[in-house]
Length: 632
Image (cartoon, rainbow, N blue to C red):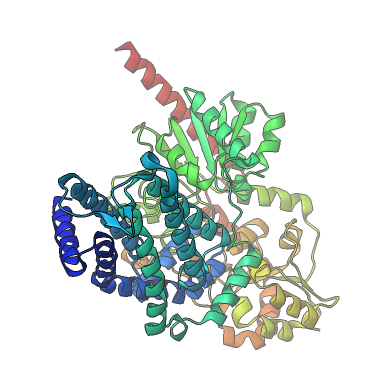
């Protein structure tokens, strides 16, 4: 600050020598600072244009991966690198403005004290402070506030980045800027207010000059921007409902947050991202409820999670609604013996292991039977202590990953898959006999069946005597409603059903055969029904670019040839012959699939019991160790 003070004092003195008037010197000084900082302003202008230019791509990522926050963050980072965008560039002018303002205040106060300048300007003593002198000097903060208001109005209309902000953000920025100007203008010398007023007015002039020299419309596709904004808005992705501090939801969250930490000696905590994740815990939790008195603290980021209704009739369950932002601090302050999650990437992103307790055992429960090595990001489970493995392929992958990356060994539990157990139980209850029904169940990834060959499949099967049910991924229904309506208009008949209601799994159980691409539903279907799957060989979705470093072929790749056949999208027109052949070999497939289900899925039909018994034994061990520690 001494360097800034000396420099500013010298420049202000130079300006005073040129015009022989302190007020004019401040105006000239303000103008010079704008000239000196012009390269920075140009850089910020270009950076802001980059931000808006790449916004359609970012919106498209949010559309494509709607709800998958980690993938969205990863893809956004790639876009930033592609465009060479620096997200911190937009705050640089504010930092510089604050430094300059502090410097100006220091210089003017210094000049007041040493009496080296005549501080009058237009009959006004620039050394006076409105809060002390009052009177007509009240105009000083009012003019400072008015100039800030005018600058915000212009920026909201003409600034390439600010004009794209939400209305709430614009009004919030304006309120802060005007409020700060009024406050500072009341407590600083009038000379500082002169600088602030001139700075705001020069910023308006500079903005229009920059827009003229570097016109955003030459670089930004505003039509595409509006299209993606509209699509995101329809999906609820642009104007996300935010919790205000006084909303019922925020109050509920705060109350649950306090209640969670008010309870001491918590043994077992489950975390669920939304209501739909309970199905992966269900078998374990039900066994714990039926056979123990362990209190289950269940955190969810879904305010409408069904767990709250369950807790009303099951006092052992203590549910808490904690939104994603507050979850960050809750996890950092976690105090429990065991934490169970289906969410990967612990420690890799915003969710960290507890800073309060280093001895918490974190258990990861997979939400599919797929290859962990292929379908999850690099290092996504490295920071868990225990992995519940659905089958020996997941155990092998985890062990070989530890060897390849020199990781400490985790506890690997031969668990199984609770969701599959439930589906198998439901299938026995809902089996309906021998129907020739074909279920088409695409995955949600780039170039899936819907995007590549669904029309060809339906055209090839239409009128061939099969009942065809198309069960698109929920994201297709959500994001491509027009496409779904087009399919219904083109193909819906008494033999072809385009299904967009996912409240029931009956169609999965009723189907005699499934057609999919890389969806994990293939294994759930086959290992439940022992019926075959026809795989369309669309491009493989690879979440872990380093998967080949692990010395084992991913389960998703080699198992397809066991469960059925694989054809290319270009061969969709000949699918009728392939299906007829596969259905004719249904008995052979039944025996093969049954043997592989027994071999590659641990503890079929009682994985919940196995997982729960592991947790029970670990809690007993932890409690005994605590007793021994206290005894010492």
